[in-house]
Structure formats: C-alpha cells, structure tokens
Length: 537
Image 1 (cartoon, rainbow, N blue to C red):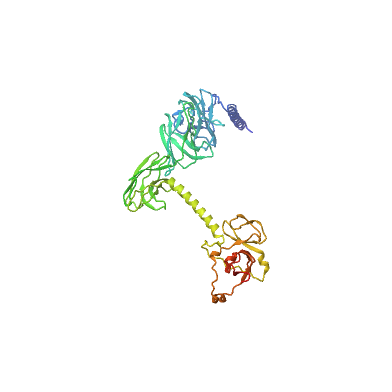
Image 2 (cartoon, rainbow, N blue to C red):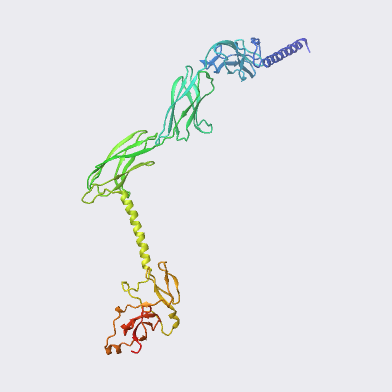
C-alpha cells in the first residue's frame, strides 16, 4: 500500500469518527433537556457537509392562532429543504424565554431535494408580552445557521363566558321551547358544547349540540318536546380553550311547569225568572281558564235532563287566566214544568259543567208551580204509611173465615158434612172467634183457652155441658095447621118434657120453651133443621 492510499484511508476514518461523535453529542443533548432545551446547540454551516437542511422559503417562522388569550394554544411552523444526498429527519422546537419551558415538534422525514413543513404547538403560560426562541433540530446535524430565530407575542387575559336562562314557552298545542342567552367577552370565536338535562340528572339528556360562539350576546331557542320534569339544568362547555373562571358562569337552572287547562263555567243568571210556555228566555254565563296553558277550540251546549241538546255554539280558545262572558237566547221555551238544565263547555280533552233550575210561571198549560218541598216530603211519608197500613189490614181480612151472624154480608157457610151414623164426629163442637169471627172446631169437652190461628188471639170456651145455646125462636116461624104442608115436609121430630132438648144430628143441647112448641128449629152448631114438639103431641 502506497503512502497516498494510506493517507486517504486515514482521512476517511477521521471523518467518520467525527460524524459519529457529533451525532452522539446531539442525542445526549436532546435526552438531557426533555423539558428544557439549552440554547448552546451546534449549527453546522459548512457547505461541505454531506447532510444539509436549509430554508425552503423566507427566513423565520409562521404563527397560527393569533390573537392569543391565556389558555390558548398557538402553532409555529417553518418550511425546511433537504439539500443533502440521503433521507434525514428534522423537527421544530419553540422555547419560552420567560419560563424556560420548551415545546418540541414531531420529527419529519425529508427526502433529498424535497421540502416539508415543520410545526410545533406551544402554550403560553402567562398573560402579557411573551418572548420565544425557535430553531430546527436534526439528530444528524447539518442544520443551516439561518434555521433559528426569536419572536414575541401579546397574550391577552382569558375570555369570560356567561349563560342565563331567559324564558320558555309551552302549551298543550306546542312543545316546550326554551330560550337561553350566551355571552362571550371580546376576543376570538370559540367552539362550545351546549347540553340540557332534566332535573340535573345526566341520564336525562334532553339536548346536546356543538356551536360556534362569536364574541358578544347570543340568544338560542331549543325545542325540547314534552318532558316530565320540574326544572332544567343547562350547561355550556368550552371546547379546547380556557376561560376566565372568576368572571364566568357556564351553567344555569330553568324552572318549568307542565301546561294544563282548568276550565270553570258558571251560569250567571237567566231572564225572565219565571218563563211562560212559548216565551223567549236568555241565559248569561261566563267561562274562566284557571290553568297555565291556552285551551283548544270548544263547544258550549245547553242540555236538558234527558240529555237533549237545545242549544250549541262554538267558542274560541281561551288563553291562560282569561275569561269569556256569553249570552244564549232560547226562543219559544217549550217547558211548563220545573227543569234542571246543564251548561257544558267541552273540547277534545277537557270539560266543564254547571247547572241551574228554571222555574216556570203559571200559564194556560200549567196550574202553578210554587212547590212546598217540605209538605211534599211529609205527604209522601204519610202516603207510604197509609199504603202499608192498608196492605196489612187487607191481608188480615183476606185470611179470616166469613162470619155466621145474621149481620154478616158474607155468604152463609155450607151445611156441615156430619153423618148421623158416625158418632165420632159428634165429639167436636164449632165455636166462633169473638175478634175475627173465625169458625173453629174444638173438642166438645174442652174448657179453657182456644188460640185463633187467623188473628192470633186467645179466648175462653166452656165444655159441652155448658155449651147451651139459647135459640132465638122469634126468627123461626111456627108450623101452620095446614096438613098438606106437614105431609110435604118430612122432617125429624124431637120432643121433650122440659125446655131443653138435644139436636138429633149433633146432640147439641138446645133450649126451646114448651109454650112455643110445636115449632121448626135450626141447630146453630150443625145448621140442621128439625121439628121441636112437646111429649104427648
């Protein structure tokens, strides 16, 4: 190997070692200043370097985001050209000279002969004048000395944000529409998120929208449907910007009341007070809406007790708290009695009603209607009592046995079915109840109390020996001396020596005086007739 070749190898080795040491030095410098970059950075300005980054456009950097308020982020960018022969990467760094904090952009890979934009986002930390330093950094060096510089910014105070609830509208015909006011202080246009919750519960989200808010006042109307809540929680959230907390209010509450209609309808009066049949009658009425919402269109009707509609007309909607006074005239009043009429207000969803008694006057079709309701009540009670008493009395009379006395107008009883050949039937006698004249059969030897099943009364009877019945012979005609009559009348003859004799049929003891014999007699017990004579005749 000659001397010249050896010298070239040594020079090449030295250059490679130098380049390697420079790259390691840059990496160590970057790692040691992750949050703060030292201003002592080597910029290789030799045009003999293999890698060389230069400005692709005008000197300096471009700033995006001005004017800036405290809390806003800004973007610095620079267009860089790779004038070397290999692919290499570079990034832009901004250092806040006031606080010493540095902000690093992302590495951007640039092809040889190409240009690309390097950018970095930085956040000023204090308001007022702020000074910054910028430069381009590459791990492999080769940065042109013109790829660095400084700039100043005016950082304003943060913008304030205010929200207030103005009002809302809500009725039965329209959904809830809330109006809110937003205020943004002087500065730049800001993005916000507007959200509304029912009863401040995040699960009850009613409205959410992203908006762009310009400085100044703005009123927003929102359709929220028909929620069932007592109040709304309204919140405005800044998106990617800070606001001045002390001078801001980004939420508010809005109390709401669900709409309702409460209709009250009343008869005021009617004229004339006592209308005659065929006369015109006028009714005055009023309708009030005591609710908080306007009513819908409705109808006014006058109904009779049998629900007959004698008048109907339309009525306009009533706003909340309003009243309506109306007059209805009925021509040819066709009722001549006391009438209870109803006045009805009715819509699709609500109803109100009132009633009044119309008292007619005395006319050709009526005899008078001044009714004493107390007398009517007591008369009804008395009539009911008479009806019940009569029913009980008729029931008692209908169950009694007809009387056997001559004064009774009821048909006489049939002759008893007593056989002369059956002596067992002669062991009973017939007596009459002294209260209801019910005829009863009792043992002939019974003495004491007897119970009448018809009227439930008790009375005393005596035995057969004492059951002697005096005959009223004045009602029994004497036997005529007409032999033809005697022969025609084949009768049983009973005789005795004294005034007493026995009935030939039922053996009832009868008293028939001797001085009146011969005479035809009738037994009051068995109703049989026979001839009573004196012994020897």
